[in-house]
Length: 185
Ligand SMILES: [Zn+2]
Image (cartoon, rainbow, N blue to C red):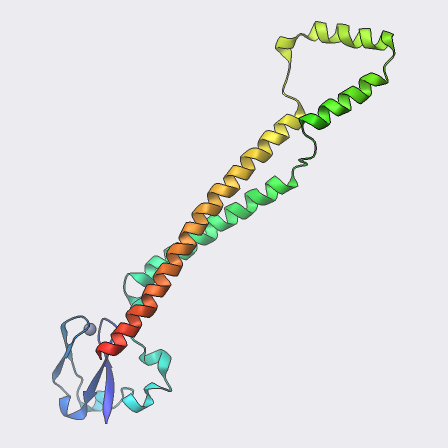
């Protein structure tokens, strides 16, 4: 009967009762592993039961640097993803149909309805206020706001995408490391 002894690196080593109290060599991490005495050894999962307890017996590369790193990546992905979503929502909330063309068309329509007297009044008014005091119109402020939100959403979305790729890369490397570790046994 062979038992599965887990090395510190996550690799499961096959040991027999005759090796109880002895040490075995782990080829995966090149270290010597103490085999427990017979009583504890018999409490270990057996090779035959490996199939039914796959999760327990799987060599686990998550326990290396990969576990914490993928956790950090996933956390960062969530944070930047949330920011990207928030900025996208802010961008979408702005009425973007109200642009410069809209404003000019609106102004022309209004002027068309003015009588010559009213037009001269408006003109005098413009002259009094002067070009130097011209303020940024409200719609332009919103346009700039929307524009800024769009870029913030793109930047945060790109960063989130980077962390997504990093998480995927680590996940793939864990899978291949686990496969390799199983072969080393
Ligand atoms: Zn090992």
